[in-house]
Amino acid sequence: MKMAKMTSDTALLGTVLHLMTGANPAMAQTPPTPPAASRPARLTPPTRDPNTSGYVTAKELPDGTVPPADTDGNFILGPTHRPVPEMTARTNVPQGTVCEFTMSSADSKIYPGIARKPGTFGTVDPTDPAKLVVTTSHPASYTRRVAVYVPKQYVPGTAAPFIVGADGPDRALFTALDNLIAEHRVPVMIAISIGNGGGDAQGSERGLEYDTMSGRYAEFVETEVLPLVDKQCHATLTKNPDARATMGGSSGGSCALIMAWYHPELYHRVLTYSGTYVNQQWPPNAETPHGAWQFHEHLIPDSPAKPLRLWLEVGDRDLLNPNAMRDEMHDWVVANENMAKVLATKGYHYQFVFARNAGHTDHAVRQQTLPEALEWLWHDYPVAQ
Image (cartoon, rainbow, N blue to C red):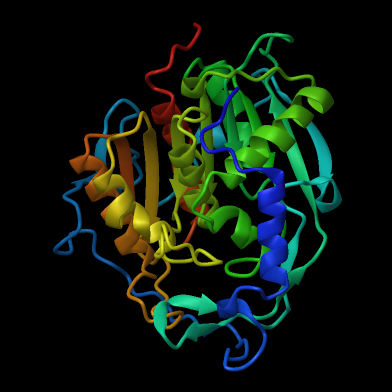
């Protein structure tokens, strides 16, 4: 299958080596570049009111309930978040199997591996508060685990719908799918839960994979992960983008949208918790200088609507890190509120959940909402009864 703007292996490897050797003056480890610093201390996030002026108008739900799985729009839930029954393993439903394998940086043509020196973060570019200078990122090897859930109902050899998840393995997702598939609320689908390459944010392998605004990570999954799923787990995956979904939390959430945005011919469905729709991309990119903040700032409002369906959530105590770069683009609540606003304006099918009494990628909220989120995500897709 031909992919849009497929990045060549040579160009990708050259980019990584270019950064590592300091050929980019902004990244060079020579004066006047300031030395790397420890990560700025994060403030305790304030509790945000979903009815704040400028936020989207949302429907307040009775405490303990979740939005309807057949309805678009904005919803407020909480403050109580109890696990729903679908998040508990049941012995009376067919149990899927989980196939696991390990991938090494030595075998990747797209991600040969980087890491940031422990205990360091970066410093703000004195000429641009929207750029972070990281001088301690260097080549480094990694291994990642991949867990593939194959439902009991899957017929070997048939092309199956699937969902790709970040920061795996995600056992809770597999449990939810066992129950939802048995109840005919979602299609019989494969789940591919991929571990990251390590670290977090600028200068790390995870940051490079998840925060880069390009098609690179989707291309990595397509060319390096999915062939191994077929080979190692004997699962045939559909090529139909309407039967392919992505999901994740935090930077894994913004990555899920990045995959579908830059390759809508591959993915049409996106599910995110506390999506990092903020300015965290590194290295800087002149086409998207504000990283994933660009989604609600320019990309979505200034582009024709794409065939995407998006479920997103944010907590009232989600991250607020104004000291990181002083660029006014590090408030996760505002970022996700802005996302809901522009998605509505452009006419996208989306469901936005504002969770009271919830932090960043809140575990209790996920235990309460994941089954409904998955059912909403696949609501317009045919499900065999």
